[in-house]
Image (cartoon, rainbow, N blue to C red):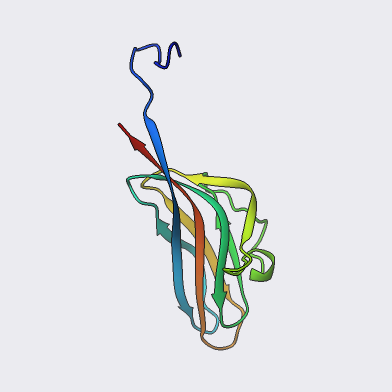
Length: 131
């Protein structure tokens, strides 16, 4: 990099940042377990996840996979240990980024003997290249 340009003589792309929230809304029946729910990241921006919050009717377990495919936790965990509320979202110790056009992957298991409505919000920063 020299004088604001790379060695090819072109200026690096400028970025614009906006808050973004990806949501997962599911009603799980008794015994439902999903190992690979996918949430599509928009093709116009990378997504940097900073915190998670949501609401649910009954107990369930969750795990989240990074963009590298690795799970965050060694096994699914209860939402009280992983997901906050809108008033008190759970911040990540280190933000995670998914490239544009990729997928956020989530595993969910219903621990309740009936239907369970779950809404999860993955809040972060959308990074757009401009110019």
